[in-house]
Length: 220
Length: 85
Image (cartoon, rainbow over all chains, first blue to last red; front, side, top):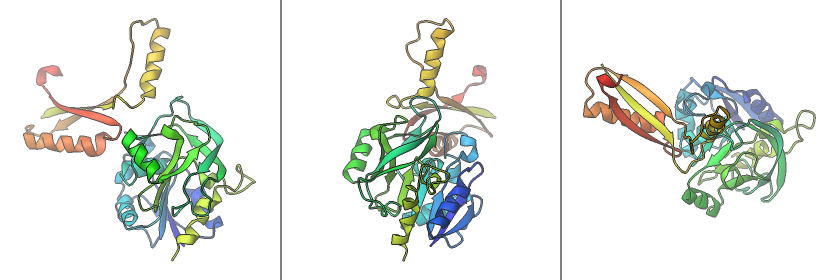
């Protein structure tokens, strides 16, 4: 499967995301924020980092980058889109996902190996896991607290759209939510970084690989 | 030329860690009697020509689409009078 990884000005984890795509057996394609072109990608990853220096709000300016016109249109048609960290913020700003990410309640940047529970494997990006499976991947953010109004939170829970939940709550996210999906399950936003947990040599293990391997099952 | 101000504030129910940090710093500097601080943003827009209702409606749109995130923030739009500057 051809998996596009968008580079915005200030993206940090685009190279790691492309590498994770390759290790999961797919073909990574580097996409540029300024192009109205997905270059034949069948899935897209919005990587972590600090697009546009986090100016205004995290993801607020990246959301209007030229390439996002194509990403948003394709996502609405069912193309798998994964937003990691800053990518999650961009997906919320794009209104492809509900809620928002605000500053961690303890006001410090956190960087740790974080345990998560995969709450739903009925998405394009988590079907390689078992629901209820515990995984450890890297969490590194300053503005990672997921917030939404009570009605939205109840809806996410009732519809099984909470994809991953923190064990403990490292950043003040409401209901310890680490990741959510859209109604169709093709768009996933995730605050922790699975692309940093794909090899034992340079990370907390290989637990993150499943997010990228999951695509194999949605490939047509 | 006219100046239009857009004030953006975190919604009351949204935790404001930056405001909390400022609140914590005030007593350390000897300032007493402040029970809460909320931190927001102020945008000043220089508008070409007269500020018509149509222009103001456009500013409202700017505030809603880009300047604020309606999920977590409220905004107000007002025209700055000459003697306010």
